[in-house]
Image 1 (cartoon, rainbow, N blue to C red):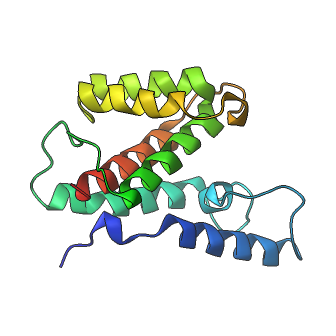
Image 2 (spheres, rainbow, N blue to C red):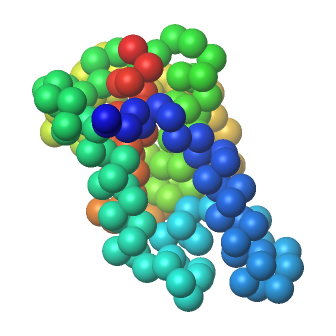
Length: 161
């Protein structure tokens, strides 16, 4: 039996990561934790970046195992509220890690490698126009794990269509 990427609730995973991080630090941290750092193992002694990457690969396994992993993986964006919520969550992740320009470049890259269609690229960039530019961090380069997480988001969005 294969696992469906849409069965994962990222808010719940983030909550568990915050709770785990809070226990290891002896209480609440001063900085708001989105859960990604502790899931990566960057702020905990028990995890490692390799275990974070392994978790991403496990989430992507159903995409490959289903035998329908044809490019582009995401042809259209889902229209229901849960799909829009996931889109905004993904774009927020990109903005926090790469800034507006880096997020736009990443989306263009995903279209160029065939992860998303040109139409999806255009719609995602339109969504970004509505997001507050002040909410974005200074531009940083996205690493392999960031792109793998984007592919997980793409797989989840594709499973909603």
